[in-house]
Length: 118
Image (cartoon, rainbow, N blue to C red; front, side, top):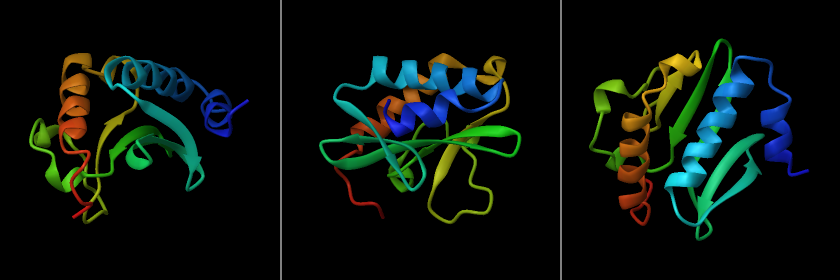
């Protein structure tokens, strides 16, 4: 089993369910993403470049974006707490996930995938 998938499956509920749902939406929305295990968390890459990551921490799951400085949609829903450059969508339950917003942010991040980190 891929270490990234093992990470997801070994999380307690409700985080496992959130992570599995996010994994399905990411892989169903973004062409060519590759799930790897980097920095001790699941990290999606496109053509060898970082795209986004999944991280369960404390009482939430973060879906963080590598090129966050270039994102332009739903910024009011992005979390930047304690970080200077990274932005994430943060979820505490499956019900917190607005799939339409999630897909729009994923597509926005895909549109800037070739830009520099900063």
